[in-house]
Length: 391
Image 1 (cartoon, one colour):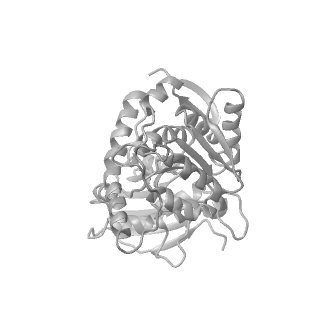
Image 2 (image 1 turned 120 degrees about the horizontal axis):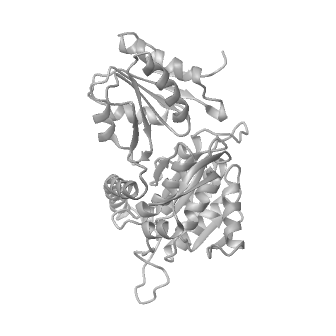
């Protein structure tokens, strides 16, 4: 399909993708570095390019509450936030998933306080990893745009009906201009499709109850149905991604497999840092070092069977987390990967890096690869390491 080559920041790219879905309602509250995304969307509305009703609320908690009410009324709905804004949504984030509402949200990843920090790490979204949302991660503005288009199809699929967050790194992606291909508006909307709510509070002929008191007699059963919906998500993600690939030529799945065919050593990571890692992997490949990467796109649901299959037979594996799990045994991605590899006799170690926006540079990637070589040769390093920290 013919597509338009444009230069946009990540925030602008996601704003365009959401506009192309023709949502009925957007619940809006500013927080750095998300604010410019909603500024751009407000421009679309002011210019008459979008008929979305923008609800300007008094907090992020109110934003998610308004999104829940809107989606339950049968409206295609989105919102966006970052960092402490996502944390303030905490209670209602769980409600949105529990009510099976297909809300889409741009989550521009930023560190959580304290101390106060406005730069990128993944501690915000990782704090909500068990809230029942689908998590898609992006490497650049192109992937942010593509994920934001596909998010609607995934969330609104009748076998899913779960909210989706499109994660992209604050400032590194959100505020950086990048070249990307954008679908024509009509083609994007045709792909997404008209919203068909599975229920609405505004239908008096078919009254329902939403969000009642749910005590010991039924709560567990309702949670089991939510868990069952998650089991169907991987197949929907795969099908939607294949259809998107046929239309655009851009292929997505659970992960991007970079130089994986003959790799003895594998690093696993998500977000914009993968672009940096690819350059160093290329340099080591030229030296004959068989290193590859799995760049994760889907963190929730975690593709455990896929990960276990792709890592089988490797000599060494490492996982890089841009967030810490305080009191846990490594970062969130590390713990998931190691669990997926249970029973495989493959050495695995992890790194925590880039907290609070600390640069992830070529030298750090080289350190990771040299550590992998050491482990693959039978050596040992710490299970968990801090990468790029001042001594």
